Length: 259
Image (cartoon, rainbow, N blue to C red; front, side, top):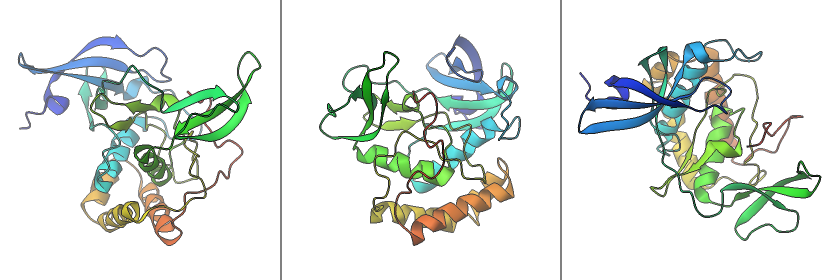
C-alpha cells in the first residue's frame, strides 16, 4: 500500500478558493504527525456543467493532463491524482507555494511600456478605458507550457493559471477543460505563435507519441475517451511534422477573463 499522503492520507478541508468556477477546496493531507501535505481538492460533484464538455469529467481531464506532462518529462503540472475525499471522488493536486515578489509572468502593462524580456499578445482597454497590452515573459519554462497547451488542447490557459513556484519552477494549474477532441485552444501564451519549436522539445514529443500505444495510452484510457486519445496523438504528430507553434485560428483564442 502506498504511503504517499497525496494518494492515501485523510483530507481535512481548511479553506475554499471562492474565485474558482468549480468547487475548489484547500486541504491538508496528514499521513502522520510528521508529514502534513497541503493540497487542492476538486470533487466531481462540485463541477459546473459545461455545454462543450461531458458532465463529471473535469477531474479526470486534470489527471490526464498531468500524465501527459509527466510523459514529456516537463513537470509543468503539479502531481495530480484521482481519489476519494470528504465530498466524494475528485482531483487532488499538490499545493504550490508561489513567489509573492517580482514581476508577474503574465501581466497587463500600459501600451508602449512592455518590459524587457516580455512579449506582447494583444492590446485592449482596461476597465477605466486606458489602452493596455497583455504580455507574458519570454521564458523558456513558459514556452514549454505553451507547447503543452497545444498538445492537450487547453481551452482555459488564463494568466492566473501560471504559477511561479518558490522552488524556481513554473507551474500550470486548472486543466479541467483540456483534451477535447475538437479544437478549443484558448490561451494567453500566444507570444511565440508562428515560431519554430526547438529540437529538444520535439524530441520529448517524439517520446510521447511512442508512449501513447503502450502504458501511457492505457492510463489515459481510464480517464478520457479513445477519440480524445487519438486526437492527442494527432496533435502531437502534427507538431512533429510541422514544428511551429500555431497561430490563433478561432474567434475566441483567449480565455475570458484572461486572469
